[in-house]
Image (cartoon, rainbow, N blue to C red):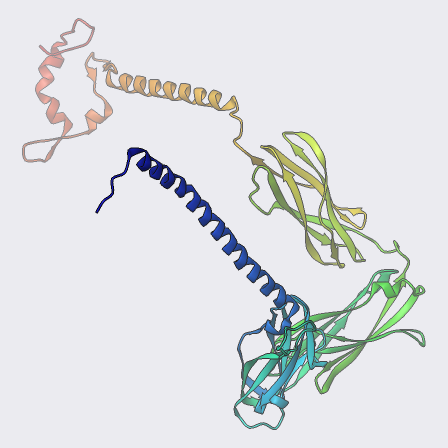
Length: 492
């Protein structure tokens, strides 16, 4: 049974209901804020604990499989493997080898493949390690498999209660297909160097080598520099790999830092070239060490060209092709000036390139072009102070100005065209209304033109008649000599 209520009570309940809505909204906002704070606070310590607790960090490698196809007996092959350190600190990684290929494989130093590594320290991120395969000389043809296991050692740090450090590792599947026997053979074709260098310059020695092997071979050089009986330099230097059946020109140097401390005079360079397991030969070269500035320096600036499509506000790349014609290697640059609309802006100098005697190179010049206009760059090549011939390159940015020569040329062309049309029209009119002049012979008869006298006419049958037949019926008229009003003879 409904109880009666007064109007003031109902109004009071409505006011209370209206006041409850903002309270509910405020409560919801507070709850949401508090819950978000709890979530982030829970995530924050977890991430911090991950940094302090390295047991949760992972390890990654790429690629996950390596294949050595067509490996030869006695051959040596290299492949690269990427190792990922997912932690926030440097980590030590160990390498374990499994399977039939375990004795053939090794992780080696990238700068010296003869040095094997059992573990490496990798900073946060990724690093590259080198995997070497050495196929024994007495191996049957076939496919051999193995695995490389990369294990990340636990990091030092605090661990939560009940947790223990663990090592995480991943495997790289390795396979090798042995198809034949490695053959090492080659020949030292030639060795040469410059007859003289200056103190402080390096001595380059060039060797021409033929690789007759069926594999890529990297030669080893033994360079020995002597002055009289004294040995001033003796080092073993690795060379670049040479492809099978090819001839390569390789270079080794006596460093310039070593030549600064040597006395002037005559020296002998002895170069011995080695392939794995065999020697290709030894050559001796005589050269002279001269004081600095003693040798001739010269060169030519062959070409100056724009290498890109510059835009306003960016830069223009200029390439200067240089040729060292001197007797000594030279630090070479392009030195010049830049103009805009005929006004000198500043001097410019390119990057430096080291050119050996008789060598060509390109020095790059970067020039800022902040405004539109016509730019011109002119300069010379500097070969350790010796200047070459000058060259110029120019380009335009923005729309070119409209010269007054264009409208003058257009007006002249229109006038000439009008005169040509008038002359042609007058020539046609004169040909159309040309007067016919009749000449008279001695007896007073009009003289016929040559084409009329010698030409014939055609009759109905299409045959030609003689000219005298056409004029026979006019004999009487010609005989009467009836003059016309114009002084010409005409027939009655």
